[in-house]
Image 1: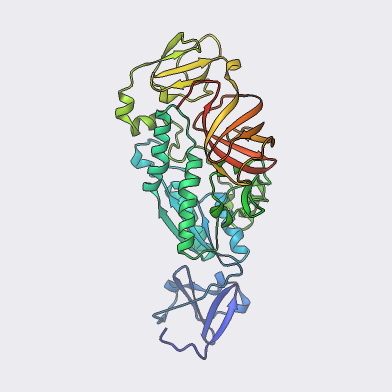
Image 2: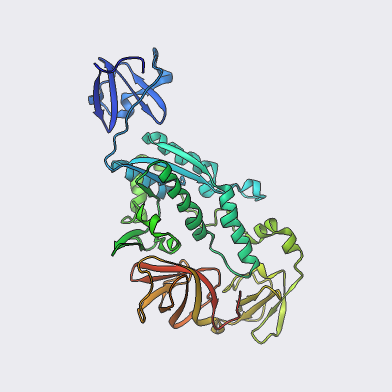
Amino acid sequence: MKKNLVDSMVIFFNEVTIFCLKPSVCLAVDNGNLYIDFSCEPADSNFARCFRSLSNCTGGCFQHIFVVQMSKHGKILVAMSGGIDSTVAALLLHEQGYEVIGVTMKTWDYVSSGGSKKETGCCSLDSLQDARRVAVDLGFHHFILDLREEFGESVIDNFVEEYLAGRTPNPCIMCNTHIKWDALYRRAKALDCAYIATGHYARIQQQQGRFYISKAADLNKDQSYVLWGLTQDCLAQTLFPLQDLHKPEVRQIAFDLGYKDLAKKGESYEICFIPDNDYRSFLRRKAPDRLGSLNKGKFVDRSGKILGEHDGYPFFTIGQRKGLGMAFGKPMFVADINPGANLVVLSDEQEMEYTHMEVGRVNWQKYEEAAPNMEFTTKIRYKDPGQLSRVEGSGNEVRVVFEGPVKSIAPGQSAVVYEGSDLVCGGVIRRNTEGLNLL
């Protein structure tokens, strides 16, 4: 700055350093925008009223402006999707005195993929603008990360390949593990941030030098199931500001802070890159040659008896009952899939029960391994209440033995093992040991 500040008065106001260059002249920078007021009294009003936009001022003659954002707790990188949960997480951290840096990850462009429905959810233009608007309102930096290439390679390609292998993938877990946290962790280091934060409903605990996920206070919104893949390094640097809040409280916070439209914003439950929930059409667009070469397949029962024809095994998932394309005179469920023979095995509900399963790609959180005969609860899908079980083995391959029969174990889905509310480990279901070998 050309003007000498040696004799100027420095006032700390709302954690923003304001330079008073002469009586009634103050200046500050908010998110790269210069604000000047020629008659402000910092002690008499808040920051938002204290400064008017440079476009409404006259006489601005400063070439360089530098204002220091004071922070109580250091810098924190917050993933902001534009939804209510991540927004309130950022609002709470800002109020607590963190120097918030917002980041919105662009992972998917639905329109260019050939979809017919208006783009919605975390990657839509409206969501990006909502996240940006909050950052501008509160005066912190906000970035957009273009992760479409990485997302395509790690999540979408995996999604297609898993269905073509006869398995049922969980893309949200793949995204959390290999895209979101990896990107956040690397950007946090580059920006010298002490922590990263998201709007997930979960807790992070520490015991005997290990970090692990625990269920959130709001069990109806708990998202611990999708966070089993987080490493010790990521967990040690992550905060979940919503861990003790229930959803109605989060909406009330947004409303009380002036974000009334956001407080009414609905939930998004579909897969972000398939907002119309038509995964079959998505597979046809992504793998036209491989799916086009499939002939009509057969529905068979467990004895091998032909029950009918189908359009191709990738369009079915274990446990599916509706949408089979034909009637069988009684409820029938997809029990197994044989990709090599293009067979879909059907059975009645009683034949869908299993007592063992193999789990691979295991990530241990609370413990490095399970002690013999320890009793846990294992979930095999997001809304599953869980079943009592034991874990046999160690490392990244284990066997889960249930105390009673469990229905519709689907290879490709995640198995997450809990001790009470604490996440012990998680992995990908390889096979149910009493059915067909699906690998």
